[in-house]
Length: 179
Image 1 (tube, rainbow, N blue to C red):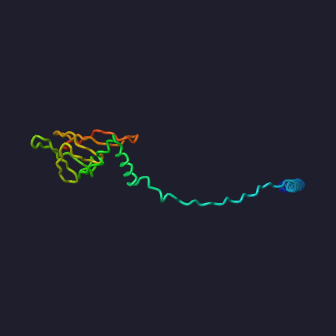
Image 2: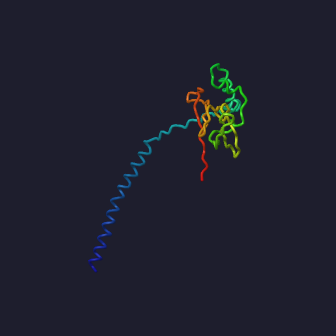
Image 3: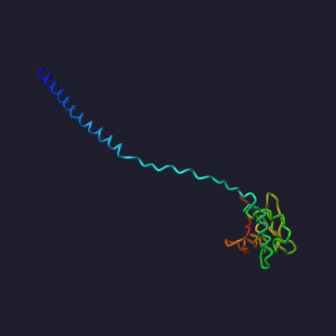
């Protein structure tokens, strides 16, 4: 027990000596910090005042809308005035009723011959139409060039990637009824 007491006293004495030694170090550190505060001056650049905002009026409302039908109509009329344009003949004629429907909404359901001339039967919106060579159908100025028992062949006038009007061939196949 005595030994324990001596050991506790020795520990307290060591701690006191240690704390006394730190005191002078602490004062030295405090002095250095004060000296640094006096010598070092912060250099903060002043903030620049904000730039004045000048709002610009929106003038797009008076311009022609780029996707308007009016603009497209003007472009088509200019194209139609070209003497060798494929489109000139198409714009100067009266549209036929089947030109209001896209080709993929039509289906050939049969063919007949009257007085030696071939006719095709088309189903559009659950109505049957009888068409012949020379009739127009589809939304790309399609004109029927040939009718046989299994298909209708059309000539369409479309724009290519360069914006030129070209002719292309399209066809409608006979649709057999699913059983």
